[in-house]
Length: 99
Ligand code: SF4
Ligand code: SF4
Picture 1 (cartoon, protein in one colour):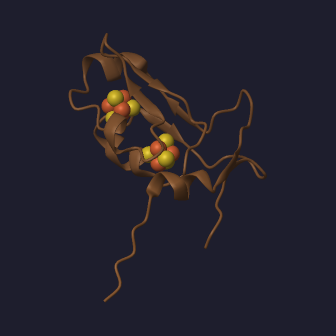
Picture 2 (picture 1 turned 90 degrees about the horizontal axis):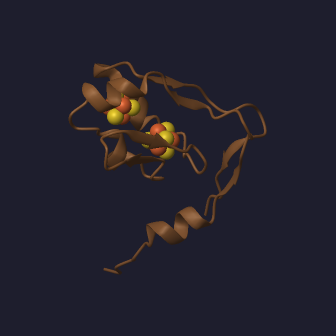
Picture 3 (picture 1 turned 120 degrees about the vertical axis):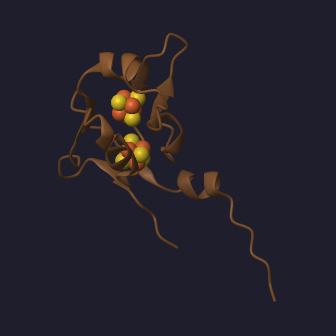
């Protein structure tokens, strides 16, 4: 049996991302909810593209550049319903390279 090693960072680097400047497709609706009501802040450790950052003061910073459109954050935030999530406009966002 042959063992194949896959480097995820190298694979992700093959993709290209076209930023829709000034129009991020995911928003945190109310940043205060992240600070005061969300104890686990799961978005900050499940995002495969590391779009969310847990700041020292308890707030969460979201930068959608590089988002893989996997939807994980959208599902995990259902307890607080604090994300506005839509696909990027046509021609923007992730462009996957397969193979
Ligand atoms: S899971 Fe939702 S409420 Fe919690 S920190 Fe992330 S965006 Fe905020
Ligand atoms: S959709 Fe996926 S890649 Fe994009 S911000 Fe949410 S968890 Fe991260």
